[in-house]
Length: 357
Image (cartoon, rainbow, N blue to C red; front, side, top):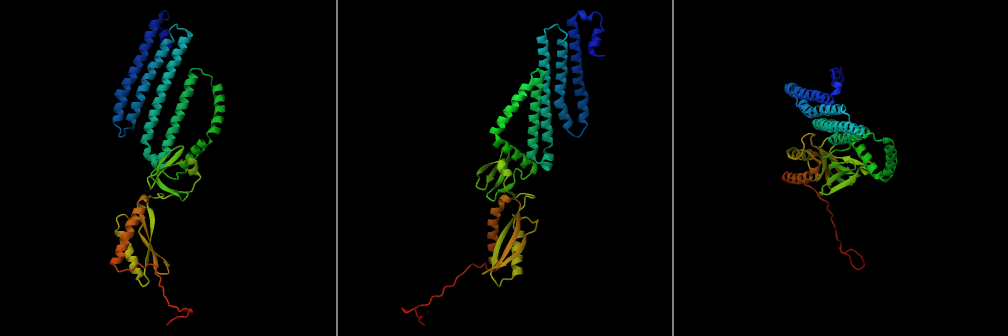
């Protein structure tokens, strides 16, 4: 038995509309107060016993919209009993349903935002923080469009002409904004392929090198070593050769060429170079530094020291410091660093181009 049948069972109630209105309004008010009491006194006590705070926040977000939905539905129901004109009754009904829709759209948006914030660690580990943020924005856009569609439906707006005109306008916009669309889909491909993320050091087409500071839907930004901010359209990035120096691990290997004189003890030179690498504070101990003989050149035996630094942005500084330390250590151990030399012999000639002994 519903509330209308219960009211109609009261003798002579049909003759007293305002009594019906008052009784019905009282019923919905009591129902709303009961829900409020149940949430505050029962559900909140239960959630305090759990270890997580997520359920507390969900109740905080869902409690007000449930309460106000019951009251608004009650008011719509109550006003439907009055002998109002069709226009007024229809306006009250549509206005109330629109208000309920807006309340729940705001609630769902807040809940999704809360869930997105709680899931940041999962996004960073699985799909990346930037892709997670993009998904959040797309979900918000879908909710906004759904809400607008629902509001238009409540007010009986004929959507057929709107969709037809939107299709024509969409074609025109697509033609005019093809570059923007290319950048959008280029950004989507970058997100899906996970080519790089904010904080990575990248090289674009073996030219531009810098740190990624922002990945947007239309373009991405990179800060070069000269502290110049470069904005690059995503459509260009999607079709460029990108070297990510920070992937798969942030460690970056640098190669230090070292030449020593012929006659040097190569095993001792290798030992000295490895010692310098192991004692350097800016060099990673894992992977271990390596020393390789690369060439027997014209005036030197060429070694190459392979070491890893923790951050690609320190490549230049660590190379500078490392070369100074190598030079100092080789001098302390009397290891000669040769340099190209040329001997020129001069013979004095007479006027007849004969050598004078």
